[in-house]
Image (cartoon, rainbow, N blue to C red; front, side, top):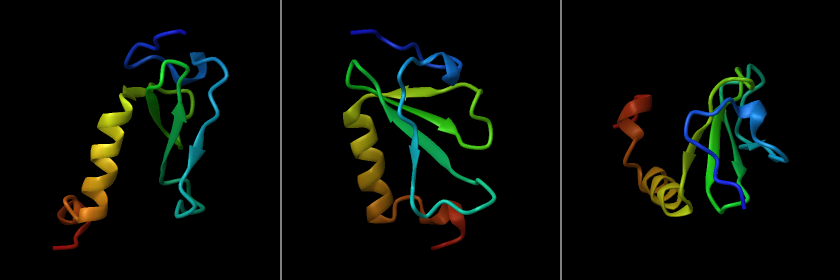
Amino acid sequence: METVPNGIQSTRIERAQWRKSRRSNPSGNCVELAVLSDGGVAVRNSRHTGGPALVYTRDEIAAFVQGAKDGDFDDLIGRD
């Protein structure tokens, strides 16, 4: 099981199956996620697929997703 360092160039993550939300728009303004062999989750910018990937634990991703569902970040997109 390989540990992937935070900030690694995303193209260097072997066997990553990147995916993005069905809500992604055609201009590519989205992030992509990939589950890593050590159980972590990598996140990259879909417009810069060769750029760096941020690596999070599943618990961190779960907390973020739940916060998004709860509206914790709505003010960041102009929804108050």
